[in-house]
Length: 353
Image: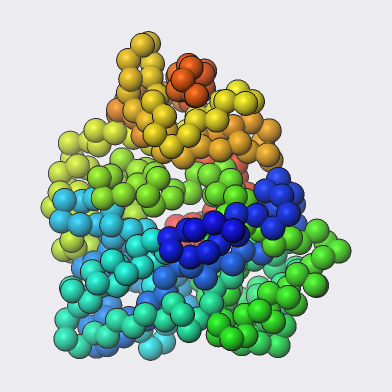
């Protein structure tokens, strides 16, 4: 157990390797109740959120979710979050370490007719992720939930809000359940999936799987000193939707080009680039590692690095500081791994042109 954002969280239950493989081959069950959960309701809640986040929530209808960034006036990323559009307002999931600050930011900017309610402690959140997640989740009607959509259902006989979202690169579901009932659901999912190889999975497997899928981690790959274009998340910025916090600065960044970029590095076995390690080329330091780990599934270490723009192209060689020595690395195309969520994403994109 380790401290994570003020919560006591499992680093691993069995071994990070076994949990990692369970997620990639069958399914893994994560307790992500540390994530913050806000309910946003009121007559102008849509307009309020539209001015707070970078993506365009205007087209969202009931049952749809959307990945988003929330920036400060200088275009730095305060947090990344998911916005859920419900029949009676919106639901927002934020990072654990930012929950209290995000809540203050929301309330500071909310108009009088919008209520922002913290539901973090009333609702637990667990994630069931893997290529066999739909088959192994004890719930009917999952076919009706599209990628980045959500609905309601009974999981092991207990009511849940079920969203087809996650943080591993695989298909899967995140389940919002009353805190006093979540243990029963957890036990039922593990019992039903035991023969198929389902395992509970901790932070170690979560970090490795999200990094393979090149999913950014706030506090490592982005923070308030990083703008969306530098983080490779410019696709979430909809400058044409109207005004939002940070828009003017981000418009200039897009026009001028970002000064830094996030790249993927493949490294040699035994060489793990840790957060903050220097990255260089031709004897010149050009950036730092933001996230790095050994990928048990791929069989070699991988890393994300924030480097000077145009310092690397895919296929180039880089040098990373590892325990006081220079270790070779290859710049590779992101993501490192394309899981079962990729096909869902592509289907969704083809339906929407």
